[in-house]
Image 1 (cartoon, one colour):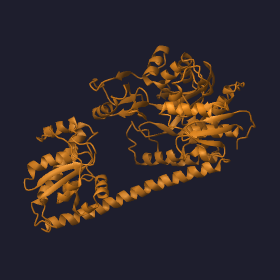
Image 2 (cartoon, one colour; image 1 turned 30 degrees about the vertical axis):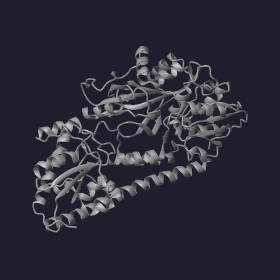
Image 3 (tube, helix red, strand yellow; image 1 turned 135 degrees about the vertical axis):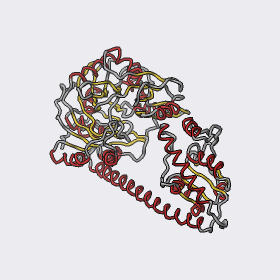
Image 4 (cartoon, one colour; image 1 turned 180 degrees about the vertical axis):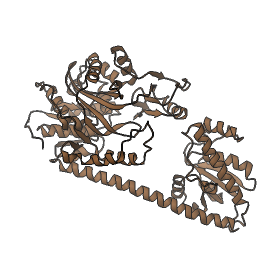
Length: 579
């Protein structure tokens, strides 16, 4: 257990109490005897149940910078706080709209607005790295949909800023690794109206971070870690990590960047390290980071260092820290375990690890070289909440999995009964409705093909998407044309009760279509069949080709054609129409 140092002068305000970094900051400062108040946009957040939280406050959404800053200035009006900790990019971006000499910037340990803006912009960070000689991936800026494709895949697509303004609201856009031209096309089309997009060469290797505390342009502390588990498996936030001995090349690169920005406060500089030990810059994270627990538990207490820096106290020399030391985000890592169990371990682009080894690593706490995020033995209410949340989340996943399997089994049984009625002449089918989510790919293709090949019935289609008159994607139109099926003038429809009531058979593509149909139109249950089960061989579910490449899309369209041909054979033996 970590000792508590009494310090009753002044207080700290931790913002964004719903974030992992906020909880770690609260616990770190609380253990040091600092009085800590917490603000959060979420009423039921983990930080509020902590024994170290002196006062919990409802924080306006930082995406509304005006309301957020007005609230913050009101809270600080009494001058009670010596340190303000912005724990997410939202609150940091709002604070960065203030002038450089504003008192709140000083309390939040922020560099100049210009330096912070560069760190918040992936493109500006990349340009700075080029100027100061830090290795970076080949990169270009995409500002329109017609930008020529890259020479090879995969390629990495990132918004220039993670937070973008759209429709008067701020939202976060995640980076992706695009493996196909189709994935790239979808991403660009979806986000280009909101932000320029940075496209980078894919850099292989392991994610490493250099965490720093700066005092007015001078590095005073640093720490290094390596990501072991990342969620999602294509690359993302770490759920399991370990401390690294300082790497001269990585620390020198981080220092060149932050020195050039005359940094003040904390930042994490993220790199990819290849098999030869070379590092390549990914981005600067100009705030406290999600894996903060590792640095604190290994021996570099950044929140306490921020407290001393904000109060003008002398900082200790660079702390020595434990190597290797491991920390785990329990709920996230359980999700990683499930993904790693199901993943294709032969795929070089998935960050998988040996399954048995990952299970055995769960016993590292017994060796006293691993701890779990937020597990402070004195903060038992936080531990209880974490365990309960992990249990409920995984129980919910198991329940959803069981419900899906049960629904699919029930659907297959119902499908067989309904097919027997049609074959036995007990149900005459004159009108069929093909149903999928968007009505621009699968059900649309089936309608066009069925109208030509099933003249004995009236075929129509629809989807659940609430925007109508959308065209089919260009790659679907192109592949369908090669199959002599014209979808060039397609316009989508949203399913309605009249369509459901008039259909003798409703054909769905997957169990999610089935679930949505029964939720909205429960009376339709007796007329639903799974289209893919009519094909030979049977194929259920039939995958949505919206985000697939042309080869995969052709496979799906062939499965649909095969299934509609199976429907034609079935209906050729139909009898009298039922009630």
